[in-house]
Image (spheres, rainbow over the protein chains, first blue to last red):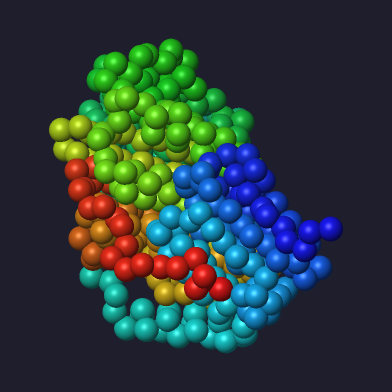
Amino acid sequence: MSKNLELSIFEVVGSPLCVASSDGQKVYDRIMTALSKKRNVALSFGNITALTSAFLNAAIGQLYGTFSEEEIRSLLNVRDMQQDDIALLKRVVETAKQYFKDPQKFDRAVRETMEDDNDGSQD
Amino acid sequence: MNFSLPLPEIRHDKAGFEALVCLHGQAKDCFFDNIDVDMSATSWFDADMCAAFGAILYRLSKNLNTVKLTNVEKNVVSILSKNGFMSSYGREKIPDRWGTTIPYQRFDVKDDRYFAGYIENKFMQRSEIPVMSPGLQKKFREGIFEIFSNAVLHSQTEMGIFSCGQFFPKRDRLDFSVADLGIGIRRNVKENAGLDLAPEDAIIWATEGCNTTKRGQIPGGLGLKLLCQFIDLNEGCIQIVSDAGYWKREKRKTFTARLSQPFPGTVVSVEINTADKQSYALTYELSETDIF
């Protein structure tokens, strides 16, 4: 039995357009099952032409609610990504880490941003 | 009862949205009535505004009103028939000879994949589309998808999502709007972030920092920010109307105002500069091994 799972996003979604959160959920379900069994996952973005933050939040961002950063770093690999898609995924990952690290702190940061905005961002 | 409600010219700007919310305000409580929208003074109608107009008319007809468009000027009939808007109001769709329209369409919230196909087939893959650099084309397409995803994830609409677009070849501009009939940004921020903000301040909140109304297992809070960053780089324009809040970002500056009446949901409307020659390539190298 293979210890590694090779996952083609194109195969899971069935389209080069990775737009829907519900499609991201399908990818998440497979990664989540594999990571729960401590399997390595190689996630291929080959032939994907459009990605949204909504898709990536569902597919990968929510992993941080279940697994530690160390677990994800050691078990999950991505490949065949375009440079701007890597940049988008990095932002999704950073936001997810913040989101799950301390929900109360996240809310506080949100409120503080709002107070700063009230100091005058309208013109 | 019979109501005849006048509609002035509708352009892709604050005055256009103001006219539409006034129309909605006058008719929102009608039930089992006849509503004639008198378009004799509507000398111009920016086609992408059909998304917001269509959302309002759909909401009125949902209240079992009979809605009709009357005294529509010939040039406006032509604009609204080419993009299929008038098909809901008894007129036949006419061919779009110059291929400059992205048809008016209503989607359900579960139609994300259908929406993606609509953008691909009705716009991106057509030979008439403006020549955009591959980087811009990708960013434009993803920006449009982010707007739709945002409506799906946040609006809680049961009445659907409406979209429409128009390309202006001489001005190198492409306008595209998505409207929903959901709870709006102000209520969303109040219910999920506990902040009771003015409608325009709620839009500011949703477009800045790490703010998100998303709760639960799936994080969020990036879609509108990504879109705004793209519009800044592209030197285009983005307008958001939600509740009675009006928000516009152009040339990296934000302008807000209060409309006289609330819109019954949210509209996100972008204007893309199609002559933009930026590559949108990153100036630094990112590694796939340094993401998590």
